[in-house]
Image (tube, rainbow, N blue to C red; front, side, top):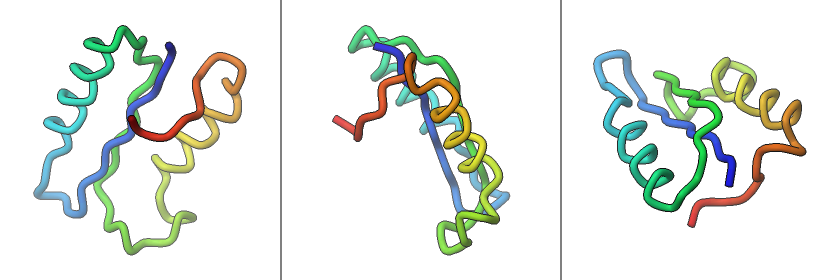
Length: 74
């Protein structure tokens, strides 16, 4: 299954590498193909319009709707 990864941390001093690494391992263990990774450093309290990487991810999913699974976490 094709999938994407999205990771977020709240501040610039935090890192999202662990999230990305653990989600990549999970995907590999399940036999999923990671097609794209999106990550951002921004407060979750910010409006979606201010979250560039979130918007980029949504645009990517919409552009690739036929090739990327749209499902919630398992």
